[in-house]
Each structure stands twice: as structure tokens, then as C-alpha cells.
Image (cartoon, rainbow, N blue to C red; front, side, top):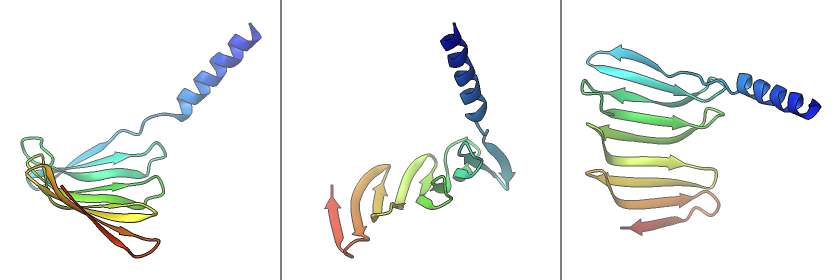
Length: 119
């Protein structure tokens, strides 16, 4: 019985601390700016929607420390153009054509080497 009470107390406390931070949406001109958050309230992702509710324009993603980890463009819900993805080890540039990966270039932080991956 004591173990059951301890278990319920742990689940209840974990639920309190794992509360979701709800996204915000604000009208800017003819678009809607959406901001999504990590559990601690820092920005996780931010970008725009068009009148039809499709992702449109620049979108950025951030890790829990606020460091930018991705950036790219949508055109009516379709990934387009150059997207950038950062990690501690590398920077990847991904070129999209009609929502498909056209090619990838990766720069390594360790040895300043550029690696091309063509699809």
C-alpha cells in the first residue's frame, strides 16, 4: 500500500512539472505568426502561416538553450530553397525543390571539411 501511495505521488508530481506550454498565434498583416515553446517556456519553433493555414515563409527552430538549430522557407506548405541545420559537430545545407531534397552540403566543425551528398 505504501508503495502504491509513493507511486501515485510521483506520477502526480511529474504531471505538474511536465505541463505543456501552449503555442501562441498572432495576426501580422495577411499572415499568422505561430510560436511553439519547450516545456520551460523557451521558444522551440517560430514561423508563419498563410490565409489557407499552410506553412509559409521563414521558419526557425531552437534547442532548449535558445540556440538556433534549423532555418528554412515554406511556400504554401512546401519546403523550398535552402534550409540550414546546425549541430555541435556540423552545419548542413539542404536544398529543396518542390518539397524534395535536391542536394545536401555538410560542413564539419572538427576539421573544416565540406562533404557533398547528392541525391
